[in-house]
Image (cartoon, rainbow, N blue to C red; front, side):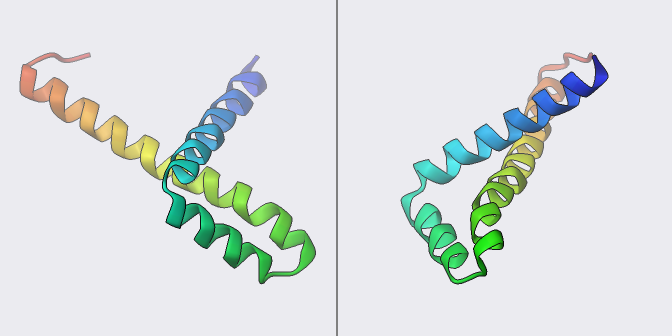
Length: 77
């Protein structure tokens, strides 16, 4: 069950990062252009890895914002 939760969490970060990247057209094109300049294997994996990294970063920012708003409202968990 632990493996499923870890894989599911990684998948959510990957999908979330992909949604953000596809929503910002210049970023999407920059990643694709950069990936095409790499070797074959790296060019296939790089967009996915960058989506995952961006998903982690954006997810972390969202967690910090939610905690800050909760602290301002005086709600603690």
